[in-house]
Image (cartoon, rainbow, N blue to C red; front, side, top):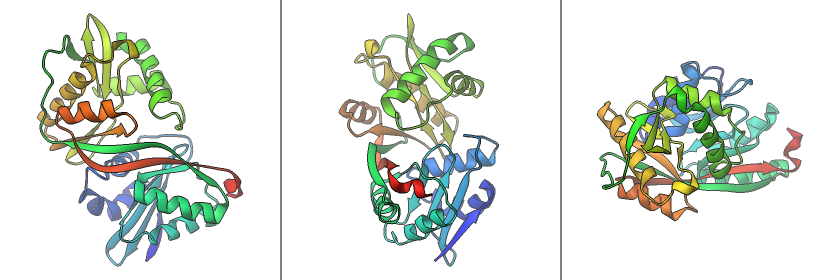
Amino acid sequence: MKLTHHEKADEFLDIAFEPLCADEARNNLIVGIAAAVRDGRRYGDEAPLFVTVTEGPALVAAAIRTPPYNMILQCDDARPEALILIADYLLTIDHPLPGVNGTLETTEAFSRLWEERTGASSIVGTQQRIYKLTKVSPPSLVPGLARWAEERDVSLLATWFLDFHHEAVPQDPPPDPEKSVRRFIDRQQLLVWEDRALVSMVGCPRETPHGATIGPVYTPPEHRGRGYASACVAAMSQHLLDRGKAFCTLYTDLANPTSNKIYQNIGYRPVVDCAMVTFEGPADTH
């Protein structure tokens, strides 16, 4: 097996794009973020990291990191030994690693390797499930209607972005909420549900060749239990399908049975379970 560090996203995608897109829904995160970096998106001040592990022409594993965020890992379930090359390479280049995201099998295998090599402790944060939808079954009798978010909504939606972050992904670096909201609005990627007042929102943060990812999805606690999130997600999903996407994906927190149920009711089906793992302790050697 051969590990290659790619300086640019397009070099990484030249090797990884086609094999990753063979299971596009499962690999939506790594493909979508690499493509966004290729197209000029910046996630932080530091240079991103792109790594592939190949055996002959076959891709065995891939990893990207856009500091300050965790590294995203993909690995053939039958070839976990490829993760050894990635772990050892990160130590060789003294690359700081706050954590990893990936399927349960991949994050568990890599975490064991990282603990052995650094003495760090791995802490499993949010466990998630990727879902895929190809046809929408919209909920009925939900009061209100969907519309695109506008400039006049920025202040409220910025608060919701922070609330979503604290509730769903507290281990991630906090966003610049107004900047995030405006980026979504400028690209017409943020839908809100309005029932006399704004009651729910859903975004579309990234796309892949045939799919699009839904998120964040947020309804303030005082408006929950009335079907607003289901209706908003259904409306955004239908919009993306109508635009020509073959499918939509979204992530749910496995600890939240309500969200896992409501999304299945509108047509989402499980793809794979994932985990977000953070590292703490003596790994400061890197």
